[in-house]
Image (cartoon, rainbow, N blue to C red; front, side):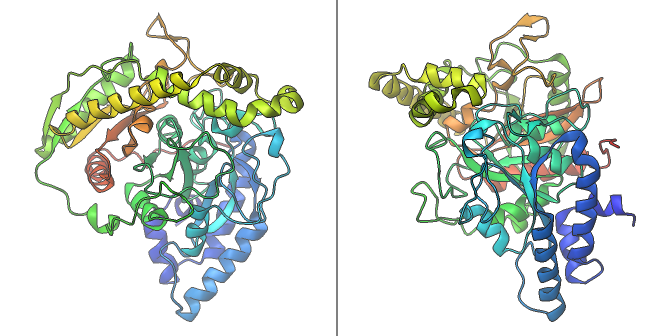
Length: 472
């Protein structure tokens, strides 16, 4: 097995090879480091590599395995961590000049859990400033580029994480999702990403409030089983996070092997409000539904109506941005992303009644999907309305020759942050230009196991992992 094949191993297979000592963590960590040194200058996935730390963690993992000591579920497996999550002793910038030199004294709780499970920290991955948008660039580290076409965006805000998984520069990538930030880069980079039910994985500490009630940590990986492996470690309550859910006592690694014989799957190409979807995206998703029909599951189109979910999402997101960042504008405005400054200033205008109206609309959106999920088990949509677009724009202004709003391309992701439901993006096809296309698999709250099962079935029939980005 050559080094590239080792770099693209599933994490669950690597775990077995480490524990039988067919491979060592030091060996695979060095392979990862060399790949990052070679590839990262082209794609800009990692903003703060931690190679010395990684080598030390890998050595300790090998010692534990050699001695037959108890080891964690992910012992010795190299991992990337998003630069929105605190890492003890390692710079955490949130992609902002404001925090350019911030070094936390503690780990974020999910980072701590991943470390406790034995992961090897390769470094921090790039994110837009405070993760505020669906593409990845910032004024400290610059633009992260799609590995399938360096002129295209990687998506965001977990863009660096998605690239690290796609390029074989990490076996596991930690991401977070407040409006699509796991699913969007997974779709555009051709990997698998799962946004869990809100609260399934805890958030602590929270330096900033604007992700409150919307954001959740989750895995970005190349194989569905690796997402189950990673979620198994990350999940469970933490008293420091008032929203965190008690452990569901589900073993996701076992659950994905217990495929249900019967499932009702609904699909929609517009969620009852989206104006337009790229023709190639639409075809890929519709063709992919045949996998589920052939498996024997019921698949039917869902007719629904969703009333302007952009408005409550925008109101909640920008008002919280304004609360946190408006006091910093006098000192920092000229060193902030102009788009985040615009959103902060827009969010400053909301009164209490506007916020209550947004909460009421959010409640109505949740109830719409609650009723839909009394009739189906899983909902299928495109992940994004388009494949990856150019890096120098924040959103595509035209889709299928039609002018669209700034949120049109991500119309399928943020509604499920409002509803707090779990949703995954899985690769389902390729554009004529060789860009990945993602399909979104959504479940009712707490249905991570069902999403993983459906994803596993699709992966088994339509595997994508043999196709790898061709980079220097």
